[in-house]
Image (cartoon, rainbow, N blue to C red):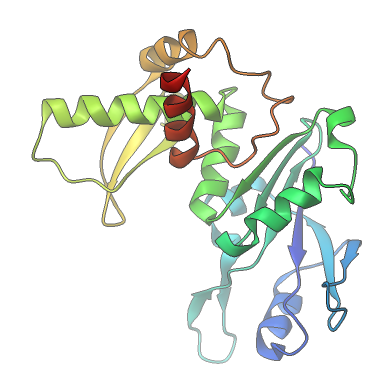
Length: 234
């Protein structure tokens, strides 16, 4: 599998972060040069090849200081490109979501993604990035998966009204079963087998556009709640 990870280098005035990024990654090529609207700074997007597992376990976002040995996270905009499958997932801060959408579909888009039938997504956390990769690698539709999460949350609370959890996240267990892991305060507290639930949800999503034709590329809990609200108002 050919995978590229494109990193937006920190601005030049953040010298310490820029230096760490340049030490951390072995760059292959410059993909593009991004010039901010005010023209004051220039950032380069560079690409390197990597093993997918280093992203799935998020070690790619960790840096260990060679002097003190302390390990800490480097949070930076990251474009994941799964080339054979025409999948691009862009990890950006919440404040950059709208601008990133314009990069994909605006009048000055980097490429004609409609023609190429790319599957594009924008996410705002490393956990979301990993989850999207796992969903697509499992051959699932992340839009349907958001509905599955609502159904699963309802089922969990009906069975145990006192249970506390912050999030349900897609994963594949060791025997290849598709599950949602139950997370509370950053810890995994359980899991739910969702194969039957996914098939049920899929049967109720027949009005969804083909996943590669849908220009909704920020797919999360808010998206599915808005979709359900629209359906109720029709």
